[in-house]
Amino acid sequence: MSHSEQRSSLEHRRLLRLANEYRQRGYDVILNPSPQDLPPSLADCSLDLVARKGDRTVAAEVRSRESLTLNGPDDLRRISESVKQLPNWEFELVLTNARRKAEPNLKD
Image (tube, rainbow, N blue to C red; front, side, top):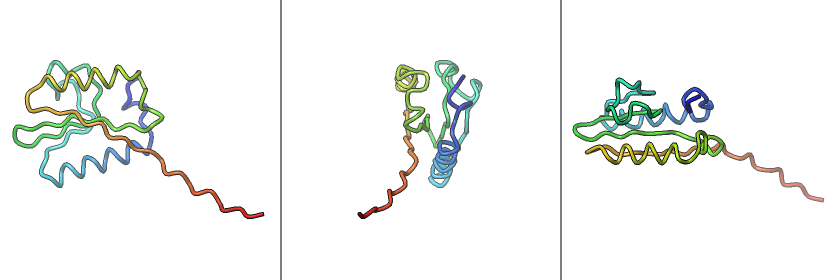
């Protein structure tokens, strides 16, 4: 099962914010690109977002601490290495974590 099929609501919200950030900077954004949206060398990669502006392309994954090792760290390493092989492409890993609630200050 791919990461996009198991994405948490926290990751989904951060992905939407990331897409909006790129759009505000003039990028064309594809969320959850299909293999047809990607070069052949990335067709088997499960990317969360591809943003294009001019000759620059950013491939991004949004992960929380809990899903960081989903499919193993080799999965992210493989994606990163595949993206690096493409001219004018870069890989962005965006980490997001739930904020911890402050513990009440209990006094004796």
